[in-house]
Length: 189
Image (cartoon, rainbow, N blue to C red; front, side):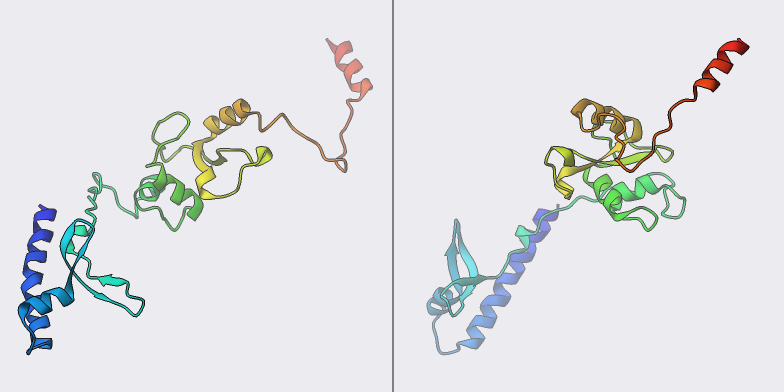
């Protein structure tokens, strides 16, 4: 339907361009006007174009070349005001109460967890994960990020070996268990 409409618009545009070109050059023939303004670009023989100073053609984009984007209806009783942050973030890629990074990734992955393939629900805990961990040379950029359920993130980080347990810095103090407390608990039992 849209392609036919765009094609019809192109058909309506041609006589208008032709009339403009004839009016601009009243003493020139139709053949001369056609050669001046309509050129062959690729497989298309009738492209309205003019050369710029570098002899490169500047073309008029045809309506048919407009990409058709199908819009998805809003589901059920969904409203931006009902608090369903996951739905609106994955639909629009933005929500005022969701961090931009998370909303963008939710839209990119269509509201699904990449690890388990299930849709996110409102009560789910989400984690932003590096596909290639930073510790293994990954970068902190969108093409290396994904949103996972918290439990899927734990599983994934265990599988890829990016977290090998808790690491303590040198300045952190660790407390040794008191031998007296251990012996006391043993005596009581």
